[in-house]
Length: 152
Image 1 (cartoon, rainbow, N blue to C red):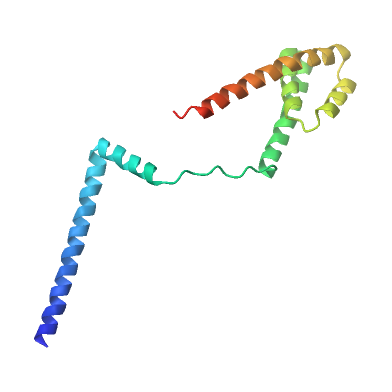
Image 2: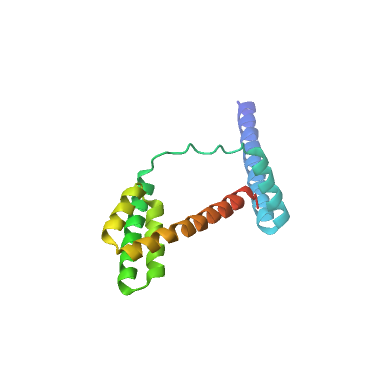
C-alpha cells in the first residue's frame, strides 16, 4: 500500500509541477507579447500565414436591407431636389434629382414623371445634367475599384 500512495503522490506532484510550468510559460508569453512589438508582429505574421485564404462570400442578388436603404435614399433625394428647386437652388436640385435617377429601379418612368411635373426648361436642364453626373459616378467607381485592388 505504501508504494501505491507514493506513486499517487508522485503523480500528483508531477501534475502540479506541470501545471505550474505551464502557467509560468503562459504568463511569460503574455508579458513578452505586451512588451515586444516585434514579437507581436511575428506572431501576427504566423497567424496570417497559417490561416487559409478567406473565400469571398457569395453575392446576393437581392438584399432587402440594401433595397430599403436605396428606397429611402431615393425618396430623400427626390424630396431634397424638389425643395431645392422650390427655393431656386437649381444646381443642387438637379444634383439631387439626378442622384435619385441613378438609384431608381425604373429610370424611364421617373423621367416621364419629371417631364410631366417639371417645367420644360427645368426638365431640359435636368436632361443636360445627367451625362455629367453619370461621368462623375463612373470616375468614382473607377477610383474605388483602384483602391480595392491595392493591398495596402
